[in-house]
Image (cartoon, rainbow over all chains, first blue to last red; front, side, top):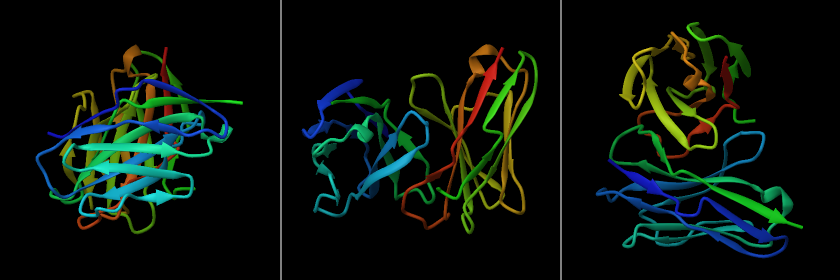
Length: 116
Length: 114
């Protein structure tokens, strides 16, 4: 079974600065997706960014980018020019492509605080 | 708006009672997933349905059951409720068998058991 580990329960960053959230995962599969979801105080789950494992190029969405290291099974999220609205719980998630229609497996989350 | 609708948004009930949570997936999505999020914890997978049939089971208690109807909406039934069942219950949907993208989440149903 796949597992996802987020070793930073809490992180903080100054507004306009850059922060990196860490995620590692364990799998024997070669085809999969990785995601970062954001959960603000409203508790809504919002997709931030996704990465297909077969793509070598790291995904980027505006101020959000990932550092995907497949061999190391590492998938970190970098938030540039942090804004107050970025404050949320961030979850890393894994989805198998080798099992059709499979579930998402989530890490335990990292609570990000943005200081003005 | 993800297109996934969950009702009710909030529910308060007593121990020993039974409740039903409802989920309408995005139009065209065949798969429905249920997750439980207890206070300050991650999301735990409960169960998945695909086009009316159970596809996968996670850490779902025997007191809990679910089903997906012909119109693809799903219900999660929680019975003999205990204090520890208080949580946020998410429903998510995806296209289905060949879908390789993300899951789309509803806003959740917050259950409080007193």
